[in-house]
Amino acid sequence: MGLKSSLIAGLLVASMGAAGAVQVAVAQTSSAQTGGGAHAHASQRALPDFGPNVLIFNPSMSSAAIQAQIDKVYSVEQHNEFGPARYALMFLPGEYKVDVPVGFYTEVMGLGKLPDGVHITGNVRADASESNNNATTTFWRAMENFSVTPTGGTMRWAVSQAAPFRRMHVRGDIVLHQNGGWASGGWMSDSLVDGNVGAGPQQQWISRNSEWGSWTGSNWNMVFVGVPHPPVGEWPAPPYTKIAATPVVREKPYLEVDTAGRWSVRVPPLRRDSVGITWRNAALAGALLPISRFYIARPEKDTAESINAALAKGKDLLLTPGTYELSDSIKVTRPNAVVLGLGFATLKPVKRTAAITIADVDGVTVAGILFDAGEARSPVLLQVGPTGSHLSHAGNPIVVQDVFFRVGGAAVGRTDTNLEVNSNDTIIDHTWIWRADHGKGVGWISNLSDNGLVVNGNNVTAYGLFVEHHEQYQVLWNGNGGRTYFYQSEIPYDPPRQTVYTSAKGVNGWASYKVADNVTSHEAWGLGIYSVFSHPGVTLTRAIEVPKTPGVRFHHMITVALGENGQISNVINDQGGATSIHPRVTPKVNEYP
Image (cartoon, rainbow, N blue to C red; front, side, top):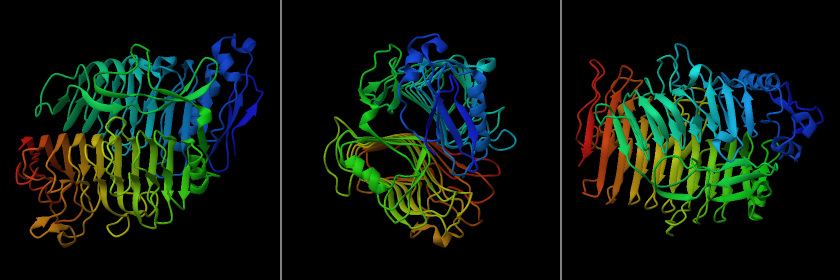
């Protein structure tokens, strides 16, 4: 079902279809009905056909009408951890008074030039998805580019992995947990919180280029990059890692609608040595790409063939919410191409191919996509540059942002590698690369995945690297000049016995973070690596394995053993000592070497 126009003034009417989809009719309102002005003008313009899984709200609609649709989406997505439904909720510029609970596979975004262009007063939140306020499975949801005045003065964003909070303005406080329950997040970037950020029991968190009145709380590993006012204290007590400036980054592209109702995608510029938010002075740089430059793909009709045909004609790509089963790779070959997913658009290769391959060219951005491995084993899910890439992209790097990977959970999935980076100077700006530990198709010989991330390119930079449960190295870094700012990893739960979980003679398991022996330069800050072994008698010799050379340096590392079995014997190489469960021992290493 497509997006249908209606002459129902000032309303966006929704009903639940048989498959749980929200059917949407978008209003066309007159200036007399809305009181005139830019928002009425915008509502009169033709809307892009984003399909049935994108809901577009305008401020002339009644709060009750908007609330009814939000609540219907949430009724589908609240407990939909592995279900097929995907949604994007878009707010045109203006003022709104609604509550916005955000469930699985839901992206909420403002369409203004600046976050304050859309202002929502209400209970905008992510709730813990498990009982007892447990948010450790509150995955796959996002907020972007609007401002919130929270009910009661405090917003709740109780999330774990794959829940980006980007380009937001909270006019009050925010807590990153629900009533003190566990959470395993998380990511915040280019955001402003007027009051306090309460981390509470969050296990770990990365904040990049964000600002706040104050920050309270810590647990295992909190990293602040390009944050002008980080909290007081230094690693290891409290476990704060502070990097004064973000060395190089380009913020994620976002949709924007101007006062004349013209739709565009803004691609922010590359910034070096940046501190704080990008949007304080409203002087936004970068490229503004009209929506006509984009091929708007729909999961019910598009294939790899149709998408590749559009890319070959020079189009950029918007992937609307849903799952795309691909019989071939989507091939991104043009410099500066933009591939932007909405509402956790999901790519699933079904013919032993990659989902996306990127040529070794300048300036490509791939953002906002969930890669779901198919049952037929792929060699890789997202390949950045072909094998043997050698060009320099230092002046205009490839950037991948909010790219998430899943092997198993919804169904059996298999891949050799999830994300392979061959192009030099690539920036990874938030990823969760997850071999499922629960759900469908889960088991040591069922959801097969050797490695989460393999880096072969030089001078690759990663911010917010979450990689979990793969069967060999979680991260294998072969290139020189690599930098990682924040790393969170659980090693696999389910090796059935030590003999199948041994990387070399006398070495139990595969290190979570492996820097290849021939690498001469690499640096990483803020790394937390955890074990939750399901079977007794299984251990890991070392969490991090690196060559002993002056150019390879690591800062602020911790290991933790959870559950009731096994241990991690060393933090990095032969240093740090072993974890213990009873009593709890969480070894830390401040600097290596």
